[in-house]
Image 1 (tube, rainbow, N blue to C red):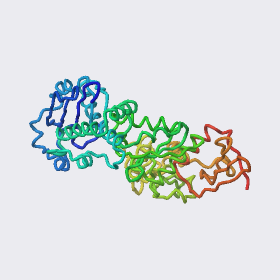
Image 2: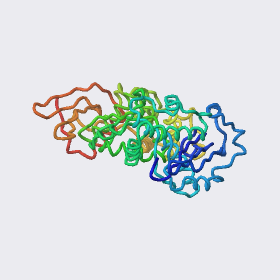
Image 3: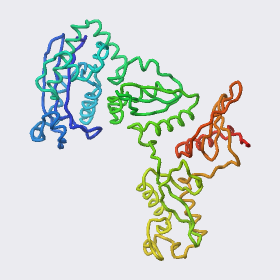
Amino acid sequence: MFSQPAVFVDIETNGGNGPKGRIIEVGLIRVEDGEVVQEYKSLVNPGTGVPVWIERLTGIRNSDLMGAPYFEDIAEELRDILDGAIFVAHNVRFDYSFFRSHFAALGHDYKPKLFCTVRMSRGMYPEHKGHSLEKIINRHNIAVEDRHRAYDDARAIYEFTKLAIAEKGHDAFLANAVLQMKTKTLPPNLDESKFAHLPTGAGIYIFEAEDGTPLYVGKSVNIRTRVMSHFSNDTKVAKEMKISQRSFNVSFEQTDTEVEALLLESAKIKELQPAFNRLLRRKTTQSVLLKKYDDHGYLTIMIENRDLSDATDLGNIYGVYTTRMKAKAALESLTKTYQLCPKLMGMEKAKTYCFRYQLGLCKGACGGEELPHSYNERAEFALDRSKIAAWPFQSKIAVKINERKSLIVDQWVIEGVMHHEFEPTLERLASGFDIDTYKILRAYLRKNPGNVTPLTE
């Protein structure tokens, strides 16, 4: 099959990801010069229980694993079988990621050549749509005694590889192997041609599932390099592995500048709500810290749920958080660090002095001992980093982002895009205040103050 030995591998796992992911069964078939020279199968004690759904899928019960060897007990034997061989598996980077991490925990840096039978099926049988092991087994009538058991599935991909060579020819097989070695980090279900057309300029990229559902939106000054970096880390980072295994397509939109890519990424994440973009996937309503003053002139904070796209009192918002719990945690931290009054911070109800005053942790603003001016100055300083800055201009502005384009901005809201080529034209945008857009614009204006032109009506 290959010019060197190959080991056909399959594993069953406990269903965990990252450090929690453990092998519970291994099956290996070593092939040299087209002949099977060694076979191995064993259950593996993961050191923890496996969930019920894994028991149902594999038929491997927790009671079966209790007396099984730990991975470290069979590691040397596995290394001998794998030594000098190409590592072959279905969705190879998934199986390899477990071997890599398990061996690494024992101080062994395992880096074999990899060959994926999903990519082989996709490359040699492009007339078929599905390339899961189940579909391949059914399509080619491959006899399998016990599906979802490691040895039986390893035997299935070995039989499929022999069949593919017999049906499509050894030259086609070798061509596929050479391509895989050149593009070894690519996910199993993504066509190589998709990457050939990825641009090297700025913009956003979108990983999509088999049904077109967006999985992840990213941005970069070099789309191709950034996309490839996701897959070079997939055997080490659980999130990257999930994206890799579920991606069937990658689309992109180019921009002229990095700041446009940042703004477009933020907008697309909110529009598409991809599963793996949790940080920027804002809800319409967010928890904000709202500043007010009580009857005695003391600065107070209350937490409100707000839709900031319609907010008009942005100067009184001193923090924006995705949940009320995060807002409370932020207030608690600031209150402790700067000896603020928990009563005035909206964290405690008391008729006179707060409880922390009795412990010497509040300076007495709640009872009038600390004057409003002194307390408010300290509170403003504590909250300064998280508050929304007041609009620093007397009018709306044009923000130049390149020679051809400027953003029209007022009160941190992008109202439109001015195109300067030929006859200047204004493309109006309908959008309200967005916290992520605010952060991007504020950072850009700090770095490029010379790119601002005040506008008059």
